[in-house]
Length: 438
Image 1 (cartoon, helix red, strand yellow):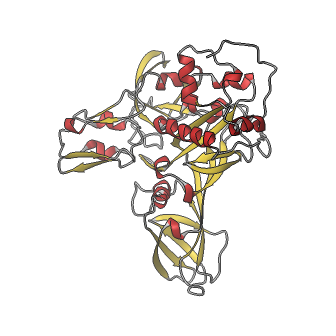
Image 2 (tube, rainbow, N blue to C red):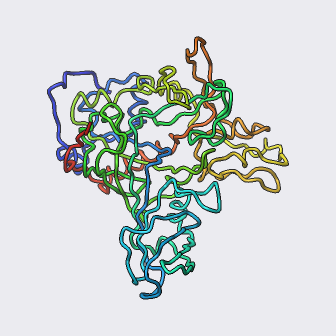
Image 3 (cartoon, one colour):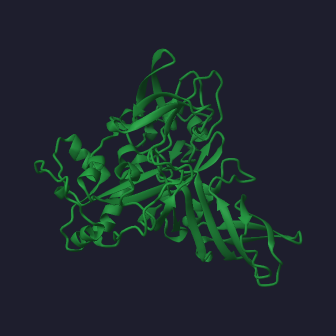
C-alpha cells in the first residue's frame, strides 16, 4: 500500500463514497482483508479505502419474529387463545383478529418446544426459511383445538426482530467451582475447576468494533440480517456507550438458512443470527479503529456463576493462530456404538449412521465441541489455549467451545462486499444518530 500522510483534517460523507462506488472508483475491502494487510505490514491511508464490510455470527438471544397468516375460513372460531408452531409456543396477539381465521403471533427466538427439549424458536425460524412444512396447533377461546400445516410461502407477514444483537464484544467464561453448571454458555454442563473455557464474539470482524462511536451505524442504517436486507432501529437492551449493541429487523422471506438456526445448550435451546454491516470510512479517526487487530481488542474472562471478572485477555488470544473451520475425516471414525459427538453436537450437525458418523457442514457452527468428544479424533481444529493469571495461579485453559462462527462471518462480509460493488446494496446516511439513555 502507499506510504502514510496526514489525513487528520479530511472528512468524507456517505453520499460521496456511494458516488465513488457508482463510478467504479471505490475501494471496498472486508474486515478480514484489511486486517490481513495490516498483519502483512502494509501502510493503509484514508485515501486507500472507502468501505469496510464487517460481520458477526453467533448466539443472539434477543430475537423474536412477528407472524401473521390465515389458518381457517372466516367465522370458524372467535379467536385463538394458545398457538404452538412445531411445538414452540407463540404469544397470541397483539391483534385478536376476531372471527377472521387469521393469527397474529409473536414467537421468541429462545422459546422452547413443549415436546422436544433440544428444539426452539431458532430451529423453527431456520426450518421456515428452508421452506419446510410447519405444524400449527391452535386452541381457540372456546376451548376447541385444531391443527393445520403451513410454510413460509403461505405466511405473508414474517419479520424477524432483534432486541439485542451484534454486541461490540462479549465475554469469555470459565467455571472455577467444583460442580458442573448447566448454562446457555455451553452445550454440555460446564465443567469446573478451570478445566475449559467458552467465549463469544468475532473480534476485529465485528461491526461496532470497526465503528465504536456509531458514526455510520444509526437509526435507518441498511444492514444484512441473516443475508436479508434489513435496517437498524436503535440501541438494544443492556446497551451502553462502552459496549453498545443494536436493534433491527429484516424479512424472514429473504433470509439465508445457513446464517441462522438453533443452538442446543445445557440450559435449553438458543438462537443464532448473522449481521453484515458496511462501514463507510469517513475520517482518519475511524480508520484507526478499523485497523485494530484482535490482539488490540480486550476480552474479559469471567466467572460463569457470578460474572465476576477474573482477568482480561484479548480476542487475539482466542482467534489468532486457530482454525476457523472444523475438519471431519470420516476415515478416522472408529464407529463407536454410541457416538458421543452426535449426542453432544448443539446443532445436530453430526449423526450416527450405519458406517460411522455423518457430518452436515451446512448445519455445522464450527463451535469445536466435537473435538473434545470424539474418541477417534475424526474431528479436528485448533481452538487454542488461553493463559490467564487468576486465583493466585497462572493457568492454561483450553477453549472447548466457541459460540461465534467466525468462518461464516467472513463469508457474510464477503457477500456484502460483492453486493456493494455490484450496486445491489446502497449506502445511505442514517435517519438519525443513536442516542444513549442512562
